Image (cartoon, rainbow, N blue to C red; front, side, top):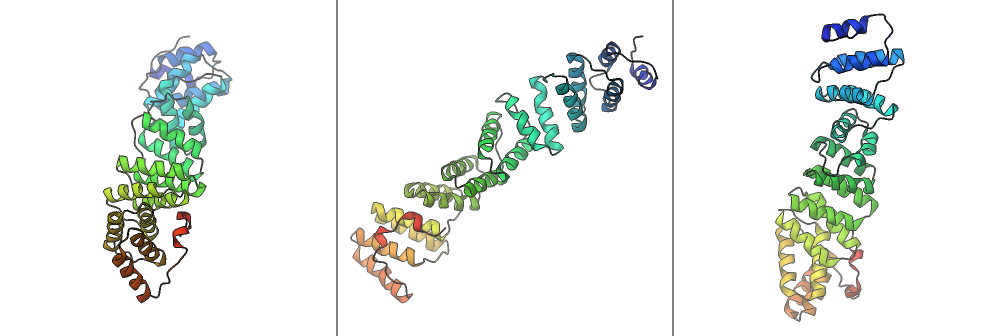
Length: 311
């Protein structure tokens, strides 16, 4: 007997009669794509009770119904039945399936499914954020960078909080080059934070990349952010090594303007820097300033390595 119409469908589901695969296929074909998700639940329940599976087009139709209804639990249920029958969903349904798993908190399943998506497939800003944040919290940098690449390909940009989580993951794993790259990306996207700048400054010190510390400083300055004492000390050391007196003066002026007082490293660097530039009067000025503050001159200072600056 061929059933049709919503009332007939409901009557069939309630009827205590044997139901075969062909009966379910015909039933599913009559279900409207904008139908109630509860009808899909009833169909699946009946199939399980009768030990019946259907063909691929029928499963796809059930999936389309629950995707249109935006029902995460139903999407996951239909997808589970499909995969148990060895049926792979169409590419166009994968984003909805991933969003459903993300909504239900199963991030691991999302990460399993994401590689199956097209490179430019958009799973939605909220879902991208969930996946990136989870990968960052696990310090899974390989997955994190892969997700970020796909997110960019889909035309999405992480939030400042998400960038900060990724930068923190790099900091904990001591992946300094990747940290600096993420910082620069956040600056370009207008999503940089003060904490990211400090982490990037630390990364430059850890890699002994004094020139990079200058670039980080410029990026922070353009974004309206301030460095900390260690960051300014890195810049002073970079300027001292290049012998650029104007740069030394500019960095120190910015430091004072930011309300940051120098320490022993700062003053030793200033004395060495101005002496190197042949500006004896300025070198003596900071030497006297050191004495007035009870700071000792470190004769070995020119041999100090950038990485020795405090974390």
